[in-house]
Amino acid sequence: MAKKSIKKPIKKSKKAITTKKHKGASTKKPAKPPLDVMFIHSCLQNNFRKTVDPCASFVLEGVLQYLGAEILELSYRAAQNRCKNSGHSIVITESDIIAAVENDNDMKALIR
Image (cartoon, rainbow, N blue to C red; front, side, top):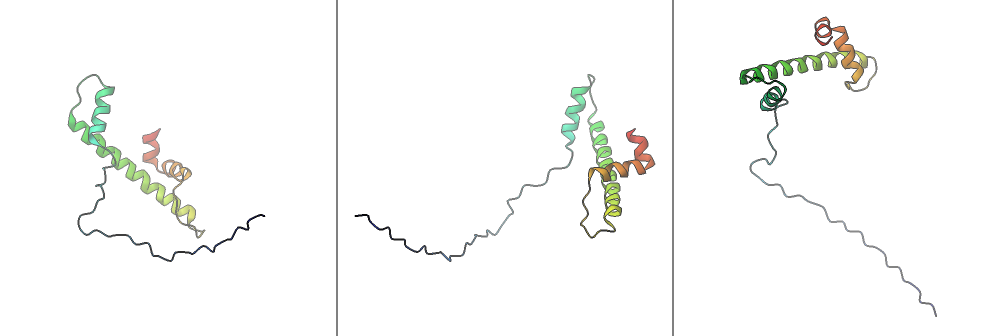
C-alpha cells in the first residue's frame, strides 16, 4: 500500500519587520576630501628626485579642484542643452564633457 502524502497549507506570517532606531551620534564616517594633499605630496616626491615643498602640494590640489569643478560646470551646461528638448533627466555623458572642453577656448588651450 502506498501512503498518501498529506499537504498542509503553509501559513503566511504577517509580522511586521521593525528596525531599532538609536538616538545619539550618527555612525556615518566623515566624507573624505576629493583630493588628498598627502597623496599628491607623495606622488610629487616619488616622481621628482629633489625635495618637494609641502606648499606646492596644497597649490596643486587647489588647481586640480578648480579645474575639476570648472569642467563639471561646463559639462552640466552641455548636458542641459542636450536634454532641453526632451523631458529626460540630466545625465552628464562622456560626449558632454568632450563638447564642453571643445567649446571653451581656455579649456581647449589648456588640455591641448
